[in-house]
Length: 152
Length: 221
Image 1 (tube, one colour):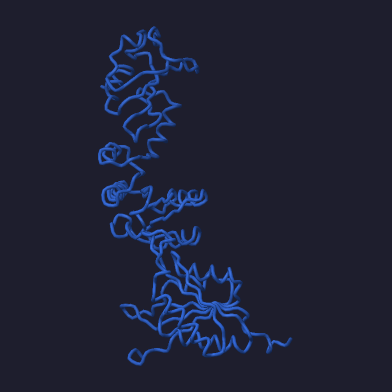
Image 2 (cartoon, one colour):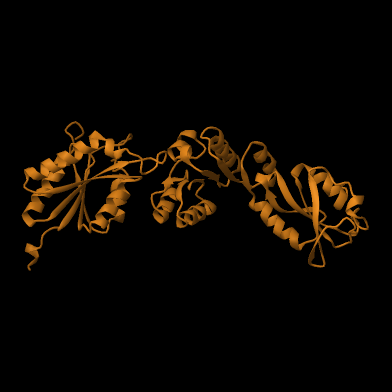
């Protein structure tokens, strides 16, 4: 098979933070998946701090979490792709996403990054993306949102 | 069991590692962000990069549901504050503190720390076992530190030499129970006459130590 025909990925895990920019990411990845018949897994992680046991019933009761997953499925369907939406409860978002990608043998992990500045003007990348970039065994795509007009 | 370890130095790191390997749930608090990241790289997402001396961070780290809080920073004051907060604010059943300066041990006990680990005292104990000293040797602490097993190595000038246990004024709350003579442990009998070189083993309350010292070793002055 020539390199041009190799699909960009076979199974992608998309991290769903719930940010409005998620729609754009799901749409882009769904279009690519649909063309190559790749599998899509959408993962939303509810972080549980240490004051509660990891198996505390938090994520299951979260309507917000459910809405995030439903929305991702809907957007993927709109592109003709099927997305398997998963809700996880973990101590750390980055570690949970990487673990899920490993578990699913994904060859691509996709995350969104909002354009934000810290107080003082430094660009804020947060702690999840550096963790995933450092630890994910598969390819990682970080989709940064466009710079908002008022910030440019 | 859920154990909260405060302090990410060598002691804290290896303690957390061993506990994880034994299957316990562990959180480690380390205020130095760089060190915290280094430990997280090794042990996974079990590190809270905040100061354990601050109540709200201790809460975020799960002190409210910890079975044991152990404070092993290199700073006695911090360790005391952490155990006090864990005990009184979060109602933790068992607190364990590392005490670097042996002079602080009494204060830690007085303020209700359940268990005190003094590396300095341990090393001192090992040294004293090999070097004859005119002091009592602390072999072990029992009952959360209220009781101690003590060894007195009788020297030629000991007031106990040539006398029987009944001739001595043993303070209340203290009991002599064995003697090691020429390397052989013997139960202490009422007719046993103490000799130079005997190692007398006693168990007693920490406050009895001074009187016991007078009877077995001699006056401190």
